[in-house]
Structure formats: C-alpha cells, structure tokens
Length: 195
Length: 195
Image (cartoon, rainbow over all chains, first blue to last red; front, side, top):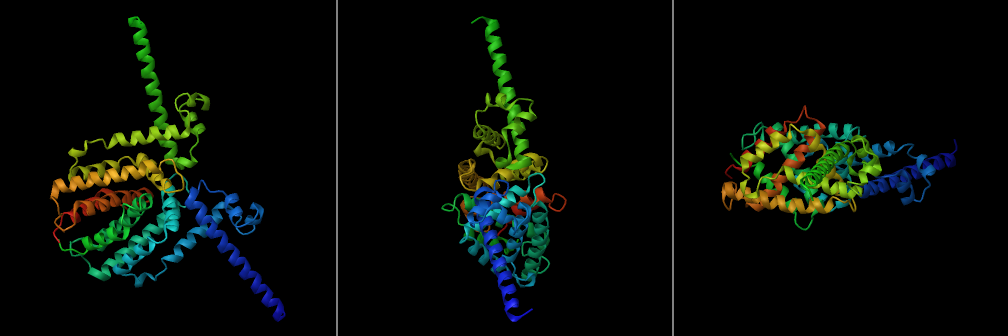
C-alpha cells in the first residue's frame, strides 16, 4: 500500500468514525425526546441528513444503535474506579445539572428498561451491580468498614445511587423547584454524620 | 321511572363502572409491559375482550385512558395527608415490594414523563410538588422544624422521595440483589440521627 493509499484509508476510517459519532449524538437527542420505543431510525437518519438506508450502513438495527448509545454512556463516568471520591460525586451531580439533555436521555431509558423484554434491561441491571460496588468502594475509602452512622459501605451504596437517580427525575420535571446539587450535598452530609 | 327501571339504570351504571375498572387494570398491565408510548388501545381492548371500537365507547382516546390510570394511582396512597407518619412510609415500601407489577407501571411512566410533550408530565410534576410538601409535613410532625441532623423538613423531603423512587428502579431490575424495604429503613434511620 502506498503512503497515499494508507492516508486515504485512515481518512476514510476517521470520516466513518465521525459519522458514527454524529449518528449516536442524534440518537441521544431523539431518545431524550421520545424514549427508545418511541424513537425511529428514520427520525435519527433525518437529523443527520441520511436516508434510513444510509443509516443502516452504520448501524444495521435499532438495537445496534442502542448499544452504541449505552457505550457512550459508559464513557462519561470513566473516572477509573479507584479514583472516585465522595467529593467528586458532588461535582458529578453539579456537572449533571448543566446537561439536562443527556440526563433526560438516560432517565427515560432507565424508566423504559423495567418494561418487559426491553433491550436496555441487561445493560442497566449489570450497570447497577457495578455502580453499587463502585460506590461501596468510594465509601470504604472515605470511612473504612463502617460509616460514622454505623452502616456498612455495602448498605449505604444503594441509597447513594437511589438518591442520585431519584433527584434527577424530580429535577427534570421541575428544575425551578428542585436544587439537585444542593439536595445531593445534603445527602452526603447525612451519610457522613455520626449516629 | 318505575322501581324496575331505576334498578336497571343502576345495574347498567354499575356494569359500566365495572367494565371501566377492568379496562383500567388491563391498561396498567399493558403499560408495565410496553410503557405508555409503546402501549396501544388495541392491546388493551384485546385483553378485556373488546374490539378497539368497543373500547372507545368507554375511553374515547388513549390519553383519556391514561388520565384514568393516573387517577387510579392517586387512590392507593390515599391516606389523608394529615395521617401519614414516618413508620407508615416504611410499611408502604414493604407493601410496594409485594406488588412489582404496579410499581413497574409507574416507574415506566415516570421515566417516560421526562420526554418531550409526554401526556403524564404535568401529572408527575404536580404530584411531586404535592408529595414533597406532604413528606415535609410528615417529617415536621415527627421531628419539628429541624431534623436531629439539622436539615429542615423541606430540605429532607426531596431526598426521601428520591430514595423511594430510586430504590424502585434498582429493585425492579434486580430484586434478588436489592432489599428495597431494608434499604429504605436504613435511610429512615439516617434521617433520624443526630448530626
């Protein structure tokens, strides 16, 4: 392969990657607006100026596109597990409050995932097992084997995750009334208090 | 109107009410399985042995049926606001853990409600304003103007609601791993502890 051929191959791979990323971003928007079951490949294709046939060249099925959307999800929180700290969680919630679109996408997907045979169900089930373990690790690093209130990190972890998710719904529905980062800081303070 | 006519009118009203209730129950099931956007009037009609045309005689639109479903939701927690107590909340969560179907319906609906123009959005937004106020009242009755940890009832209320909702998603996805009532009791203990 000549140098020129190699460059062309690289450019074409890059263009393909960029196009895929653009399609995934469009899918995130369409899911935020309509949910996954309400989303159509046609709507995603239209948003990026492709025909539905053209889109299928990148993602052969709606489920394949969902997989790419969920992989995208896994990218953002990609702080190595060992590097998470309680104060970083507060920053994450502050940051989330500045990106309602993406929080809307995943709150809608989480809601749908509990319906029968939903293609994101396995993803969320595994994700929560991982996230609870991860949060228990964060709490252990901060407090040792017992929090000041006597709970083990493993028992506090599902509460921590539940508060983050539950506040997102209240906040998405009514951002004027719900101070999501402030409420989450209140919860972290509760967790750190002596019994 | 003769006595017989009056009886017939009453019976026919009762039959109509029973039929409506049966349709609403079928709608709750279909929404649990497919979400609201994924639910069709045809699927609900089939479940109660009606044609779609027959169903429209009871509920002229899908949104009208949703309104009836949401009114049904409001029935269950219909303990008068002034009668709620913190220990009753723990019992409510125990009870919820015995009825995954209905919790699935409303977790799916809550998730969808954050998407654009969803017909249940107004309902959930108003419901949360009311539920947060209600929970603040419960906490005030229990603890006065400050919880032992120093939070006001108004600041603790969104956390209480968030934990209930958030735990439901984790539990619906993975009932073997998540002890929803136990985790909720842990949270209530946290709320009642001194700073």
